[in-house]
Amino acid sequence: MSKKEKRLSAFDENRPGGDDRNLVELDKDSNLVKLRNLHRSTIGAAMNTIRNAILTGEELVRIKSNLSHGKFIPYIESNKDFIGFDKRMASNYIRFYENRESIKEAKSIREALRMISDLNKSEKEINPVETKGEEPKIIYTRFKSGKPLNPKEKKILKEFLVGEKERILIAAKTKISEIEKDLNSI
Image 1 (tube, helix red, strand yellow):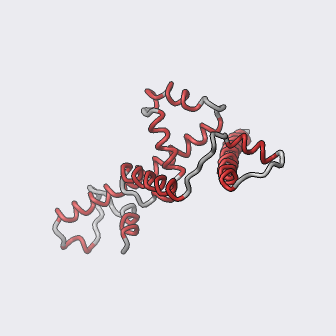
Image 2 (cartoon, helix red, strand yellow):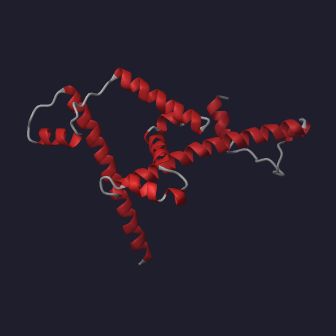
Image 3 (spheres, one colour):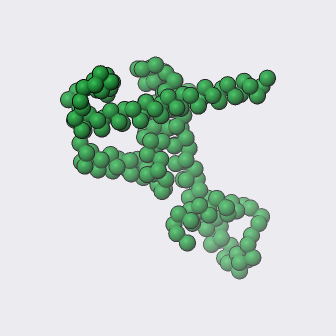
């Protein structure tokens, strides 16, 4: 059984204190059974922590897409006492969401942050992006007017347009969900 399968099987197992025991466990030392169950529960909790961090990032991306430019950080900072985290942690949560496929094997938040950091370092070394101070929106305006773009500008523009597409899609899904709730309540 692979490590991943073992971690996933932890969700199917009985939790400590449960009355159900497999027949195979009856001949095992009860201390060992308890240790194994606690370990599996710990692994499951860690996996839930990563999943919740990704979901928090997804929710932050959705909220950010619904706020006008420059309003997200003040929104988080003015509510940090209530939500329990500040703009730095919000940024980490968003990074968890954006890199969700790469961190799904992480065993802790710290390891997930390290994995994201390593991804960003290797990406910067392989593909350094120099924008010459131009914003993607300016590059987009030039593109729309028919002016040629260099390969770096094309890469920046593609990333910008993919992000815009995702932002609009999240906002649309949110609005559709609200409309569906209203329709269901009629």
